[in-house]
Image (cartoon, rainbow over all chains, first blue to last red; front, side):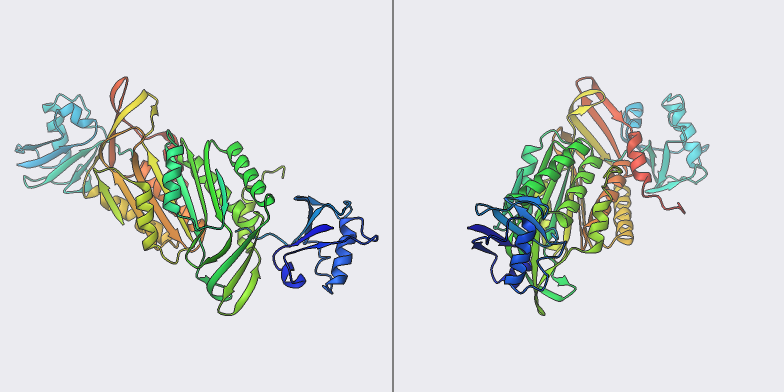
Length: 82
Length: 82
Length: 152
Length: 152
């Protein structure tokens, strides 16, 4: 099970700041995970916005990065400072 | 008697930070007071330097300003901040 | 020194602590940022600030390291509050010490620009109009850009 | 608030006091200047600072008024020590508060430039080489000139 975090306004959309998800076979990259979750939450593209960055295990990554069941994957809307 | 104040390095020259002085008849302006005191302290022009400003009763003045026996007259070398 | 904490920040106690570590400095600058009572959406009741550890801390530490490269500021302290807080409470404290004041001012200013625009935080304001996640202000970005090197 | 005093300055207590007067501000900047241990003439043992009251206070107050004209800083505090002091002790404390941080930083910076270059003080350093009255540094003047208006 991958651990998925939703920061900022994204947690309003997903209803939780974090969850654990069994990755389906169709999801092997960060980009594919976006597509899968955007559909699952009926987010109408909110998780696909290029300003929403993805981090895998605390490192920002491109959508082509591989994701696995042992990863912590964070969806991060634009950071606004403190 | 006029009250004369010598600030900063000037007090090393005059031996005191302040004194009261009976102004002689030849001294009716700030500039004439400079001349008189520079001679009296054998200051070799240290009190005549244009960077040494004179204040009468807490107000900076030109050398042409009149001085009287009731004034507080300050000789101020360049201020250096704190 | 870097602290990210849910507890309240006491700026004068933090300054007092910082002074002890900055012996020999000629100049100490402190900055305290407080939760503003007025916002675009109305009167602010509270603020919720969310961090992502250790990414948030790593980013702030990188900014501190960058400040130390750019200016002779051997001593730097940053404390940032997260979680729920109320209007008027301190949200961030930065202190810098240097031999000369220009370095201390500029390094503190630089760090605050990082913390207000680029630091990994998300914030939600509660006003009399309700709750809203808020985005960085355009002039915050402009401030931060003052520090861009020509090679950036 | 302006204080010129022969007593020691406690920066964190002054900041604590200032915070109470600056309710509603979003940003508080403080600057503490300390007597440096190192000087051109050697190790500093002590410093003697001489003021001319009320000219000294009037000049500082005029700088505070000018800062309030130039920046939205409703709260400003300046405390300056005079008389004999030792290396490591605080010589000056400035605090500014504003809604936004840029104003608070710039006003504090501006006031410090006034206090370090134009304020009516004379100072004598005691080092291991003896006593000497010291003149302003060239870069202090350069700092202060940054604030000159084109009409000056």
